[in-house]
Length: 279
Image (cartoon, rainbow, N blue to C red):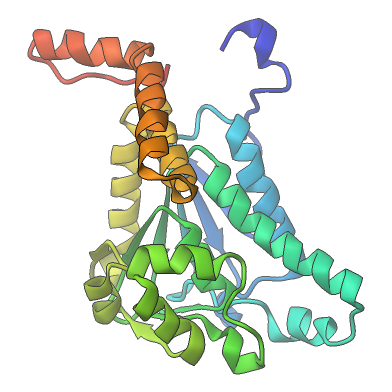
């Protein structure tokens, strides 16, 4: 980026140390670990907000080109903490409740808006808001023992939480999404793989290596173009076919102006593998 534009538009995560989850950076891949294994990694008011802020910040970070999100201790995430979130919600006023539900929705918005593709590594329990975070990711790797459940109806709430009624049908189809959102039942790993909920199914010991390797492959690609693909996948839900074709024509023309496009051509002509740099 031009140095005149860098101030306020580019940030570094060097030294970043969140309080409510773990963060590691391995090369160009950032790893988020939900780290309350004794409770199956539930979310709290504070972790919702801190995750939202991280994914918002990632829009301004160049050195991270893909994200993996996992849970510690053999489970992904059990959703909102019953004692630290659900209990307090029962005593809140409507304005406070709306502030909370908007905050949780902002986490999904931030995940969809950040340019880095997100790979969710799903093992064990993946429930409630945890299932939503997996849903908001771009790709999902899971195990046969994973159990995904959109539990909202089990606690007397609607299945339309954090964008579930918009996002989930686009992943598994309207009928299957209706099944999960009305029943709150668990979707096992093998069934989820068959439905297209999980992109890949692996053994538990291979889960994180597979997710990191996949994210690494993505990170080694043309990151500007990957960000454009992610943006188009999201924006085109609300477009007609003609609008989408025109939007993609403009997006592809922009990508043709990148140095990565020229690097790919030059590498092809020289019978070499291109080394993408994201510009």
